[in-house]
Image (cartoon, rainbow, N blue to C red; front, side, top):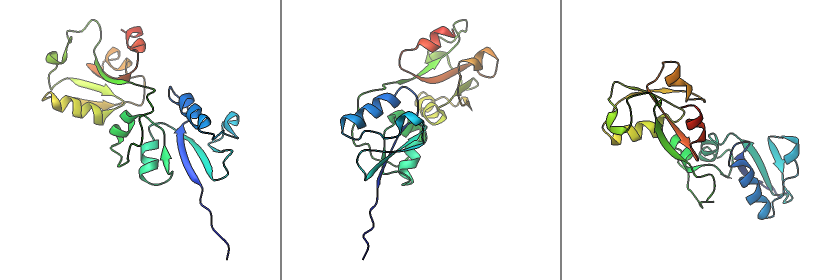
Length: 175
């Protein structure tokens, strides 16, 4: 009888602020990647029973939930945004961010108390934003963008934005 061997599949971010630290953790654990330099989507490791899949960090929670991969490294914020039913095994303590509510410097919005439900909020994170606004009894319209949310108030499609930030540099640069 032939024995069937299954490989363990681990998803890591293909790019972004947690990609390199994720790969470093795997390498420190002895799972050196054989194909990392070639930008392959799936890399064998030096452990023949483990492969690594490179994916968008925001897709990883659903890949784990849907059992496409056995485990993944991604941000807890992205897990919460996707509402994926996954178990956090360990906090790797890198890539910390926080959801911020931001308005243009020249607006009259200076705090959450200045918001009204008729205002429009642009974001890449509608689930987290909705939960945050609901905590403050606000039902503002949420527009979902796939990036560069800072431009939304400048072009008139939103009054303010929410975004995940680690330093706030991009928000400051865009006023």
